[in-house]
Image (cartoon, rainbow, N blue to C red; front, top):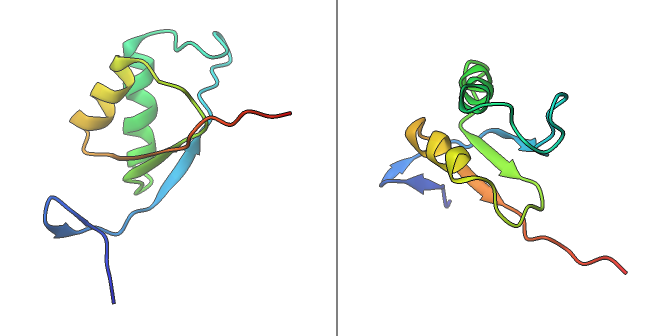
Length: 82
């Protein structure tokens, strides 16, 4: 069968849906530390992938943190309703 490979190595991807909501800033993270903390805390549960829910583009800080921690990112395309 076919298996997903990242950087030439089989990787079992397990992740979560990121809807980018913050209780104290709605769609804006309060700080870089908060962005990174969410990823590090989630990584402790064994996740290595995030599905980015219908965003045109996240901040460069978010992508930097994802990449530096070795996460895979699946990004949905925004939809036009109506």
